[in-house]
Amino acid sequence: MLVILADNPCARIRDIAAAIGITERAAHGIITDLVQEGYGERVREGRRNRYVIVPGRHLRHPSQNTVPVQWLVDLFAGTLAGLKARQRGAEAEQQAPDTSRRERD
Figure 1 (cartoon, one colour):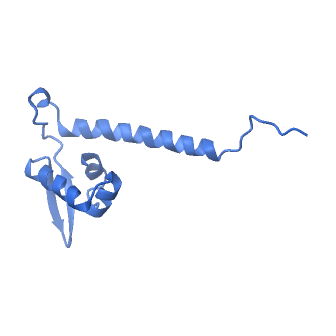
Figure 2 (cartoon, rainbow, N blue to C red):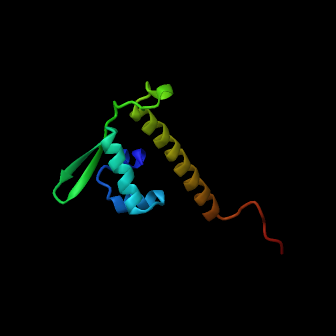
């Protein structure tokens, strides 16, 4: 959720829910929890909300309370970018003509 909000702060809850594969109600609940805990802010812009991640906020678990949220977002954003690149490579490989086999007469 944090990665999606960091990547697209103007995303609608409907789009966020679809990207993650959860209900809109669940997505709204998670966003509300993140805002209440101080990991993000909800900024009203006309009829829409924009969600801003608070990058300096640290994780709350005692063993990870020195880790800023931005580090976690960067870690997963990099992982997701790598996954997307591998998926694009696999798709391109599937679409490329198979040159390893030669047709027999």
